[in-house]
Length: 417
Image (cartoon, rainbow, N blue to C red; front, side, top):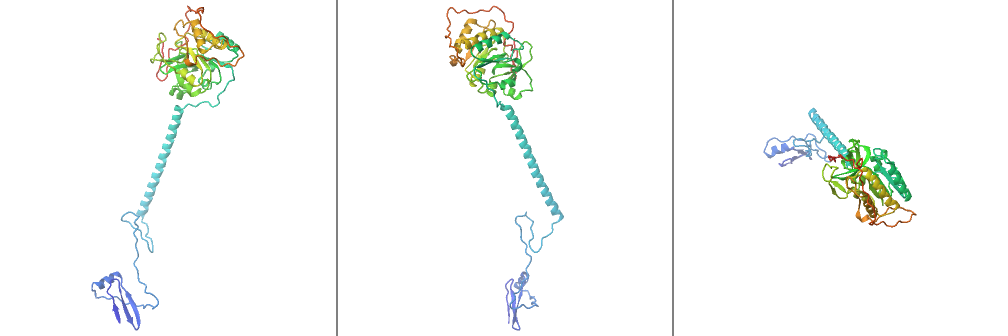
């Protein structure tokens, strides 16, 4: 008996001598049968065992790799296709291009990082002051005389008399001569003095009052301090070399808490630290200036009880003479700031040339005295009376304390007419 099937991909079962055999068609052969073809498949020459299944030949299976680019495929089966030279070259080119991109990106990031570090370091260097960490502190009952004029305008009598007054009041005295009064010295100025006398030149500008050091000016030095307007170029009109001068920003930056309960005396022009220049150029004769605390404010922020100094320009000889009487009134007679200032002004009058007088800041601390731990009895309070004699001065001074024909820093100058 023979049974045939016309299904696509079907086969023929044939009984031969009581044994059955099956011929399997490939897909193409099944299509021929379905279309009415005459050719029949050849019977298998090898009869299959009744217990052994017939193994059908299968085509090689190709699997598309959807992860690859369109138009390419990867053969998966009995064997892998070998890579052509063109494919290897393309792959190597892609690998090299990727490596270059990574290398360039890393190099770029490294350059950017180095630039950021450099810019940050420069910014910190110019914008943030480096303060002293180990600040010296003097003992109790000590006063300081900072004499930046000891070489140009020495006055041993002033120094000896001031020391005598202060010693009699129970104060030890440290004298700093001109060779010591540098920018670095001021940065490390000791803390703890109850009285600090600045016998220095000083002048005013639109940025306020500046005290002179004795360190020669060098444009290449202290560039960050000059950039931050803490230091300025300063020159007197006697022809001396220009020097560095420090202002309120310098005090706030480097002298924090150095003047706790101290009285400051500024012997130079505008030494009270309450003046501003109204123009880029300040003329010594008939100088006009704005009023307002600046340097004095900075001293007070760093603990000073009061700042006493000249309201305007002053001659050197007059300043030396009147300051000695002020020291005596404060230290020996133990007068308050207000009493000492009023007494000295009444007895000595104004400067014979520039008509300036002593003033102090702030006004609310006028009732303060020197913080001296002493066994000396407190003198009676001084009050002006009708019998007080006011001195007059007919002598023309030989020099002018202010010595400020030029103060030039960051485009600002002070010149003598």
